[in-house]
Length: 286
Image (cartoon, rainbow, N blue to C red; front, side, top):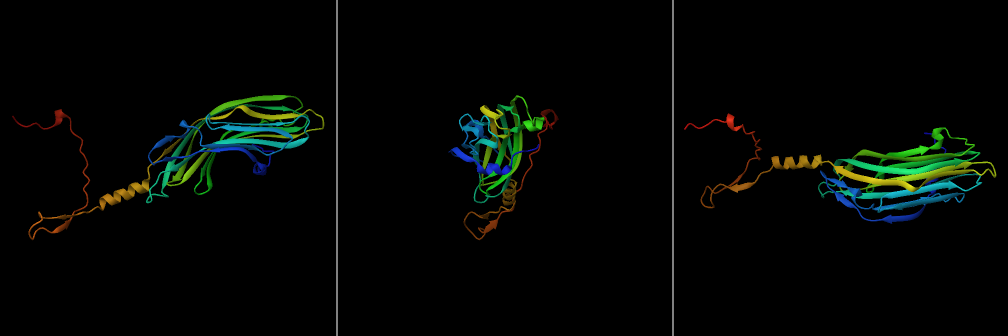
């Protein structure tokens, strides 16, 4: 998809609101639904361009993010960006012996969105909405995965030089799964993020307006869950410990020359045989 907006503009975001809470610990071999409670935190902001009306917000309780970018009437040129996000954090449970062990995981999500894009211009313009699910290793300080939830811009619909009004209502839902390998003892952050952007180059006094309005419905996180696999390394180490286990015992009853110490053999794993049906078992003679 062609982009008309420099990625570097994202660096100029001014955070206008922020909220943070706690985190949970998820242990290998378990499943946890993060979204059963309010989001842990969030933030909203914009790129500070006064030529545009920029509104963004988040609600940790309803797990909703919203953003609107709209050019002011008769503005000549510029780019307006508004964004918001919410996130959950969790730690993969560990012990001193298992810290750093790799564990496979499956992250599932479901997101709804709704908004509209409008162009009334005699110049060149575009409106863009982007939604993403991000996975970041907070302990290592690195991003691990980015999943596109929804992306739509009017330029991709061949609406480039609009000499009349264009209004597009945008809504939908997406469910997906993110596979990832996590490390025990590390803290991870899952973020739902949206960015609403408008771009405009117009003649003077043209009455041009460009709008990317997701400030009513926005993006709502319906479900976010993490399922952790078993720690294979820990399981192997436990099996080795069992196979190599020995213990010392006395051969007598505490008296006499035969009461000496001895070492047991390794454990014997006995397979349980399947019981035959009663009709097929041998019977005792009467």
